[in-house]
Length: 297
Image 1 (cartoon, one colour):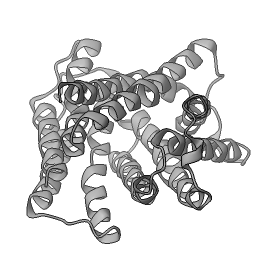
Image 2: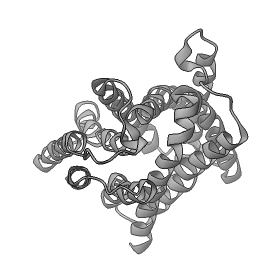
Image 3: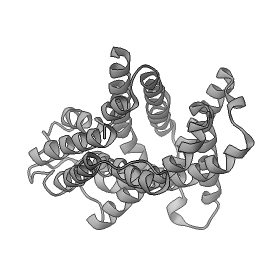
């Protein structure tokens, strides 16, 4: 159990740090260009990992349609919307908004996978929603001037992008869950999902749409930040999560891994030298508590 706890908390820490690492390259390149580069790198990592581990045999031909659709929705749409939110709203608000994927996943699981929806899960959904609202409305003091607390563009647009990211992530998970339950290896399945998203992002770059184009040249420093972001988020973070799942109850592991919004606050404090507002702390804690109620329902 100690390994499960440490693994889950380690995964949350990697995701928190990875989110902060992603701010600069996402703002420089644009959401689509950053996500395209990141997914190409992560896709190669996962393909290599699945090949070394010899897990491709776990994927039956009938699995691929679901994995491809899951990759297009959950990663191509979801991650692109996530990094667009990151550019507009900063890492703290983005992490809080993205935490909505927990209640959305719970509701979708009830509607499409016949998973039970206990009263405590409904209460958890309400607590997550309340925490998100609190962290966004009351999460910043007037004295906080750091660029990460600046909202670029209209606030409703940023919120809509964050909720789109959370919803797409939830839909992607719901689509892929039956495949994983049938015995598909998570690393091989992730390799397919990420690779198809990378292909879609490369194809989107060929369209005459400015939002899909890079906003700045891809320099070596930017590439280094992107590699670090992918390595922390999809490499070390996901590996620690799988180790935790192998040694502990999935509900406990998922709850501990969902502490990312709270873990991010002291990191932001250290980086910006500005203590997050009380509303940010209370909102993040409410999100984590609500997520715990959902997964343990």
